[in-house]
Image (tube, rainbow, N blue to C red):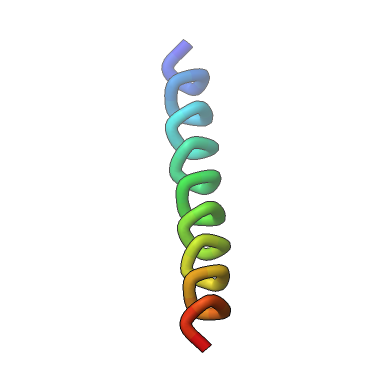
Length: 32
């Protein structure tokens, strides 16, 4: 079941990237 850990890691990386992008957008809006 190597694919399970691979998909789990991929989903975690994607979620982290999306949250990081949203956080950067919110921080940019607060600075203006």
